[in-house]
Amino acid sequence: MLLLLTLFGFLALSEELEDVGEGAYQLIDALLVVAYSVPALVVELLPVTVLLGGLLGLGTLANNQELTSMRAAAISPVRIAVPIVKLSVALITIIILLQNFVIPKAEYSAAQHRSKTLIEPELSDLEDNPSVDKEIWTRSKGQFIRIGFVQPDRSLAGVEIYQFDIEGNLAKMLRTPRAELLQDNTWLLHDVYETQIDNERSEMQFKDSLLWEALLSEEQTRTLIIPASSLAPRDLWKSIQRLEDNNMNSEYQRILFWTQMSIPIGLLGMALLSLPFLVGSTRSVSVGQRIAMGALIGILYYLAQQISGHLAGIFHWNVPLTVLAPGLLILVIAVILLKRAN
Image (cartoon, rainbow, N blue to C red):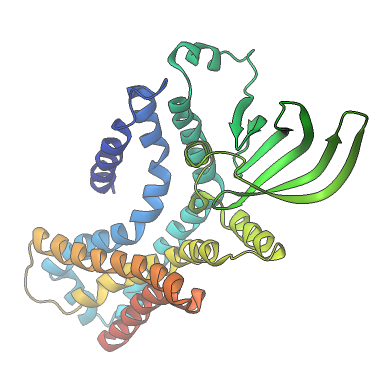
């Protein structure tokens, strides 16, 4: 895991270094962003890691004829697999905790550091001052927008929108305590107070919800808002429900949700897959050969997992079945091989 994290960490750092120098974004910010990405990398790499760990750990037992001795002592492969399953359950618990509690907060902290690319260097000291308000002012399509605070759940707090007529007079104002990003750049405003203003009077209306386009620019959204893939599964499912309530396409969010659900299945399958390859092995295999075999299987699984998500979106196949297919296939193959060895 440490070796893989080091490799992928350097790759992530090389991408972040491209933004160093933009606004107030510095090298220390890039390093912190990479550090905050580690929990998500751990979850993504765990299925491959347990396969490599199984091949290395159990491979040592096979090379020393200890697995053969166990079989001669009438210990079945299924019984040998019990500790592997127990360890897999422990790792799955860690994955669930990371997905629900650690990754969303870490990605939010990373987004706060990335936001420095939008801050002028001379204002960076003010941003670090706790006495200075964290509000954001921006302009989009002829309207001025005030944002009180960016929330960790892909929403904005304390939003005010000011629209002006062609003569520069204030024509309409909207206030909402919460604006939630649904998809692309479509926002759902909650508990909206809309004030229409003309030369003689003003009129206020209240709306439970209101769809709004382009509250932020694409660059601002990409920088300030955490990606949907970093949401906790329960928040991602709530996002799916809100999209469907507003008659919007939720397919992309469904793919992300079921991709998160597929990781524990793939981890269990990968962990069990290492044992059938080694039971009954009478020849000594080098560590390098085992790593090469595990890496090849891991790469194929990773590619299959990525392709299944794209296929589900392109051909509109059944999302749960398509996305879970690689993990279920690995698990079924591992169980079948384990039964044959048994």
